[in-house]
Length: 335
Image (tube, rainbow, N blue to C red; front, side, top):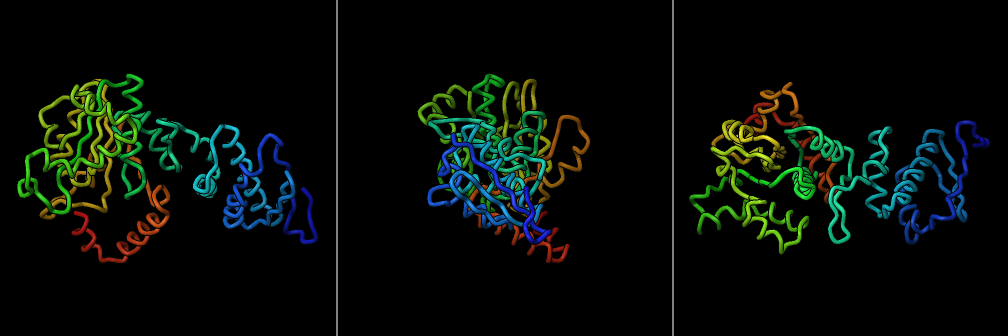
């Protein structure tokens, strides 16, 4: 590394291995290079396989690390994309100790050439927590992958014979609707509430196998009310939309835990649809279970949103708006 005329800036040059095609690293028409340039303050000059960085020492070092991490991803067989490049830089900005290659190369499931893996630090911590604990609460806004990743871990556990069955459940309360007032049979009434779980299953398993697995009881998708009075052994159990459980329902669900079972509870405490101002079981369960061994709470944030980038911005905007409201209004809205 050599200094230029301005002692506060530095230059450094490094070579990309000839075994790595520059188009794989920099993207078609330098798409990935432009993403890197927009995210760092260092100046980047590419000539052949040599890359020269100029700027403040900290930014030059950071930029070189970005290239090192992208090369590590390529070496591990991970194909780069604009999303991968953005997320890699975000991971390093968020936590300098984390390596994008460790986060983004963690494979949970693969189907038809498509892999399901965590895409953020928070998501990886969440997946690691599911491996390490019997009961995990995944709490965060829409788009953070809390339910999708839990279901991927459930399918993985079934395929590796860690469990004998998967049980997916949701409280049948949304937008103030009650089942008794909806038209159709009971199955037709509950289907809209459970449809997102079916959709995720179709992403992870061959669609032709799902009816057979459900008929055999290997996979069960049912409203929360169907859990009452049962003990669930050797099962991976997911409670989705848990913010819409009452305190009594949450206790009922958690006490279904049997031997060889694992529970993941997911929800968003800013999206409570319980009627009549009932307190959410998800909002109070942390205080109740605080300090209980083998139970952990994972908080996902707007930084973990993996949908359109605007979703994270929307989540942050609502959080700012909510923080400006009087405390009494917030309490009523989230009760």
